[in-house]
Length: 72
Image (tube, rainbow, N blue to C red):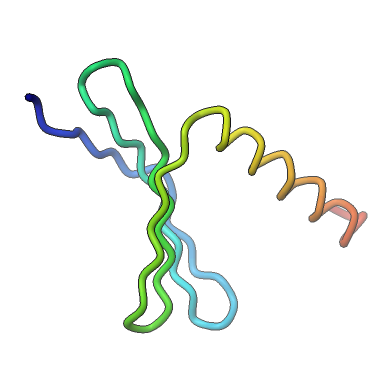
């Protein structure tokens, strides 16, 4: 069994002291997941999202941002 190859995608500081990192996780068998990690002080939330889920999440985030702030 091969080890995962993890590559940085994005690193963001968001309001209320939230630190978000996105990483591409290559499992070596053709499977890639987007690891979404949110740090709030000492608390962590980690989700691995498949490409279809990442696309859907991204579309929903963009739609919300445009609706909330039409200047975006």
